Amino acid sequence: MKLYGLVLGLVMLVAIAPAEAREQRAWTKQISAEATWLQYSKTIASDRLGKFIIDLKTNDIYFIDVNTFNIHADFVLGILLKKAWTTENVREYNKNYERVKPQFILGYMTHHLKIDKWSFAFWEGDKIGPDDVLRARKRLEETFFIKNMPFRPDSPMQLKVAADIKKRGVPTITNDDVYKAASYQAFNKGRTVGKLKVVPLGTPYESLTFDRQDIVLLQESYPDITPVAGILATTFSTPLSHVNLRANAWGIPNAGDKKARAKFGKLEGKTVYYEVTETAVVLREATAAEIKELETKLAARKYVELPPAKLDDQRFAMLTRMRASDVSIYGTKSANLGEIVTANLEGVRVPAGFGVPFYYYVQHMKRHGLDTRMLAMIGDARFKTDAAWRKASLEELRKAIVAAPIDAATLDAIYKRVRLRLAGRGVFVRSSTNAEDLPGFNGAGLYDTFPNVRGKQAIGEAIKGVWASVWNLRAVDERAAFGIDHRQVYGAVLLQIGVDATAAGVLVTKNLWDPTDANSYTINAKWGLGMRVVEGQKVPEQIIFDPTNDGTKILSRADDPVMLRFDDKGGIVEIAVPGAAGVILSEERAKALAKQVKSVIAVFTHGKALDIEWVLEGEAFWIVQARPFVGG
Image (cartoon, rainbow, N blue to C red; front, side):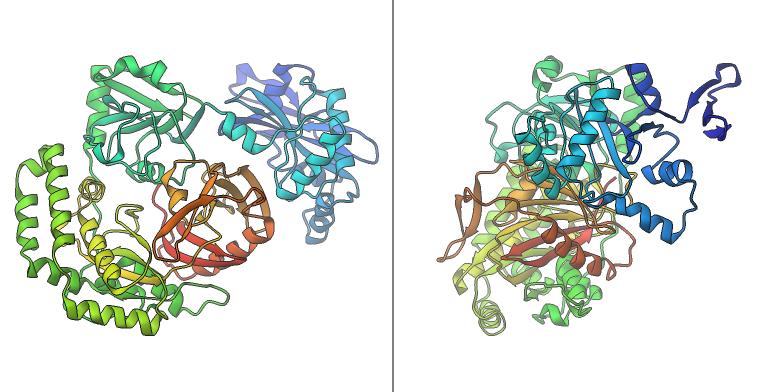
């Protein structure tokens, strides 16, 4: 769009086609009807957004056309002040985000379409005080067609302001309120066809089996599922749960709709067309043309090239001796962390650990004839065509791997290194295969981790448990969906000092809620150890953090009443979250975490966004995993 007649009233010509040309001012001082609101606002994701500016010297309010002015500064500098975009002018303009504002209040009106609620708000980095919030609300009451709009705080600092103005009788609404009130959430937009499979309430996770062509309607939260054509859930939490990350990697439509069972349950067993948009789903019987078009698309497999495996190296290398190139010996998880550690990044903490290379997995399988058994299993025609047979066969193989005794000399050497190099502390025994944490295939949650393992015998059992998890059903089906040859997959193990986390979570170095935001990180957090964050059972604390200006936008607060901590005897226990636990990711903590992450980004050269797992011990952050983020 182009501005015409700037001097003569700022008249803008919006031309869809010459015959339909209309004139509209680029700003107005009053929005008295919905039709005007629609002209000056725009829809971003599931919200319709407008912007206002109040000149504190004149008390004039300007509702600006957000389709013309991307940011408040475009209008303030270019139109009101008629100043150039110089460093000095921008610095002066930015003072309007301080507590004491020299001239302007800069705000937003938002229509939250999913819940049909309105709010007014300010940029999360704005240090606006109660008096200016009240002044803005007064002008909105006088000039905007929606009355009694609540104030929506967008940062921890603004939450304190909200508490103040609430005492003065002004309604407030939080992002947490908005998020949890929504009955619908789009996690991955798209369309597909498949057979609708409704999973009955009470179905145990262990009994879940799906076909690649299924569109599944889940009525409970599950920690993971095998590859499917589409996902629709009646309970949902966050884009960073394993199920949602999985759907993102598969490139399939995925949404949450609390009323999905009532709306679509009657279509169970039918071949359906499923489409996810930002504000709703379409689910109906598919036409023949849709089936032909979209089944072809689904059948087009992604192929992932595995790094080659070196199977003769027997060294138990510390992370301090490991580089990214050692992926061929110790697997991707260990090699990625080794690269971070050996880069010697200032302020970046990684728990000490060492790798048990592929060699010992291969020897364990050969010594007990498990390699021959595995090859016979995957060579059986039923392995690809019969999901129930495949599931049962994999379970038997895993049991056999765990039941077979680990080589005594190997276990002695591993335990000696735990005592000497890891101070004999409880360790996390973690998978580090060559089929995870790769660009195009992150494999989040496919393999098993054993927390706070203590004692030689327990460590031996945990190592065998990690080896066995190479043959988890979810791992096998996920690899098959990406064309990975199971015969080329090997299990290494990472043993790391366990951090008894105060809190833990996941950070992705992109804004998963707003693709137009090129700067921000998405961070999820829960109290205690991190396993609950990615299970998707409860809503975690979610924030968007912009490291370019330390802006902290709160999306939701954690609602899990329990947390996981270390048991002194080994393993973990579930305890209640203290009533006074408060906020996990304060602005100071988010800034400290982002500072470490910014350093870590420089280590990776693949150019992908990163998916980083972190833990908080007191006020100290530790990085415990870094891998490419796979998805949109």
